Length: 320
Image 1: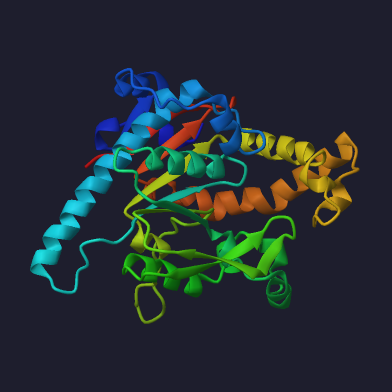
Image 2: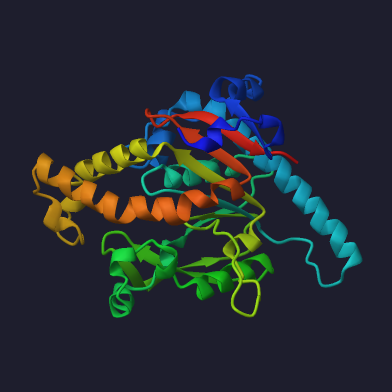
């Protein structure tokens, strides 16, 4: 396993680490009253999230998020009485990061649904960073089509402008939309964010660390705008296996659509599909995970580590 979960001096770690069993005791017997139908709507292909896991793991995650949200609201209100430029109400932004195929999207949708069920019924929007990928034509022009999903494949300036406008309380902020069917930006679609109570911002590289340019000027980061961040983690061979299995499953679903960018792979044999998925993993996704995604894990406030069965078995929560 990775060294993060084998810290010899746990007393020096900024994280408190819990087993799934330890974390489950924190729910105090509460339940979410989710149904299997609810979960089916939220799960991505290949994800095995269960109703038990929702109650024993994610319900306490939701309670932690609620506590942070309330505390942040109080802080904003207090600062607004001191500083006239501070708005008393701006969206609480939760970032969710992690590898391709690790289950980020399921986690993001589930957390969105849990927050909507808080007693005050907050408005929660969910946006993914896919919308800020450069169009395929631009990626081809730059010669980085093979690096789609790497940090340099995103229009980071426009993404930062979006986050800045949302965090400053702008009433209507537009985000671009990515079509997974077309494997490209959809220029005819957009989504407008209208000052939600909570915004969930999900993507591979949202927790990138800070760098400085030649003049030693700090480079703005997406994470500058986050109030809380979650990293969905797993042992790399497990993620690779989930990625390959998802690819095999998609041959019978999304790839069958004649309009799909991946339709040409729908009739691959199991062996051919496994070889193709393995090549994509090893040449693109594993490299991105190793070089760009996993190094951001320690920057998260909460790390959810999954086992081979796709269920969470370790939780690391940053100490206050």
